[in-house]
Length: 230
Image (tube, rainbow, N blue to C red):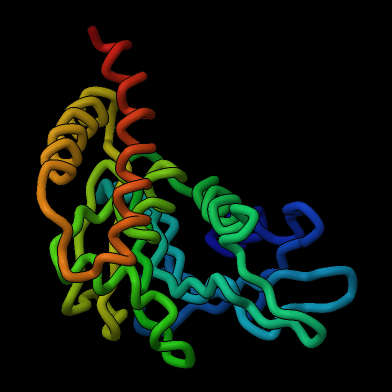
């Protein structure tokens, strides 16, 4: 299916009292035929957010090259409306929006999220500082969101961007290709997080308090998987 038609699946989607609005979908001349740039806004009644919640590119994949669909996006969890401001974290709307994006993805797919927005450079400062101090990616705000929407089997921190999306650093979350690899990834994650909790706090104490709470929650989730494997 053409990427334009695939992207329409995330348009006009109801999330609580909001609806999504897809805008500015276009194919860049210097990129593959499967690539589309897009912007996704939120609509409340007749009012559309001034800021795009997601802005970036979607690649629909190419089967003959075994290339899976993926996103490379900016994410704004504080979109402004004309009459009010919104924080998507307060009611887990951020996670619901990422889950919406994930309906176009598959095993082996990935989501790449910028760690700095041009007009809001400090929006993802917490995630960047925690990664810079060596915290597990899944313990950070963005890493946790990627994990919860199914893209936390593997992480990669892009300090230098590649592939036509040169720009700020980014965090990549990937879903394992099959059940066997997913199990291996979760076993490795359990070991990483258990070892992390044994270590002293880093220099980002306030951020790390939240990070450790996320880790404890994730370990409880993973314990269910561990029991199923036994």
